[in-house]
Amino acid sequence: MNTANTSEVVVWDPLVRLFHWVLVAAFCAAYLTEGEPFEAIQDQLDGAWLQSVHVWAGYTIAGLLLFRLVWGFVGPRHARFDDFVRDPRVTFAYVKQVLLLRAPRHLGHNPAGGAMIVILLLSLTVITASGLALYGADKGLGPLAGLLADAGDSTIHTLEEVHEFFANFTLLLVAGHLLGVIWESLLHRENLALAMFTGRKRA
Image (tube, rainbow, N blue to C red):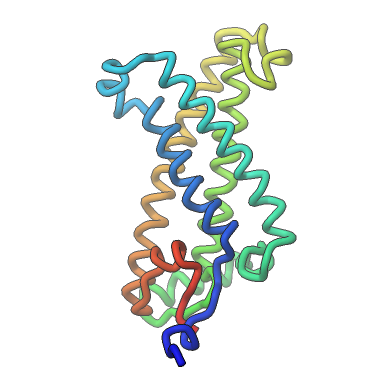
């Protein structure tokens, strides 16, 4: 008998894992094709091609968010929101335990991880909505073009500011998420990043 198989259980279903990694790729593509820190690289490439990549990355993120919303209610146990969304008091108490190196291990998302997921999803939703609005207002393209094609410069500027702010805010959230994954992996001596590839964790 393979003891490795009996000591591990499937936690993350294939669709959650696919969602996670496609979202990572789509966000990176969107950020790198519009983010200010990469203007020097962008200047060397075709602007129209970069705009196309940015737009389709945004559409991909929008589709992923819609999928995750549905899967959060009908997916397997550890994919559902009711498995990892906790009361803020529980979340803060868990963070305190983490800092004291006494946090209990969770098979699915821990309370802090669950809170991070919710904040990330909300931030990505704002990015996507503002991006679609900006695309319609500034370029006269996309599903919102009919509503925003006649928008004034002040509206376009506001949309740009919101879009850019939440893109950078999401990048900070991603950094915090990675830090949390590393911290928890060391604390509980398991590779959480690998688990999101294989779907399996120690029982």
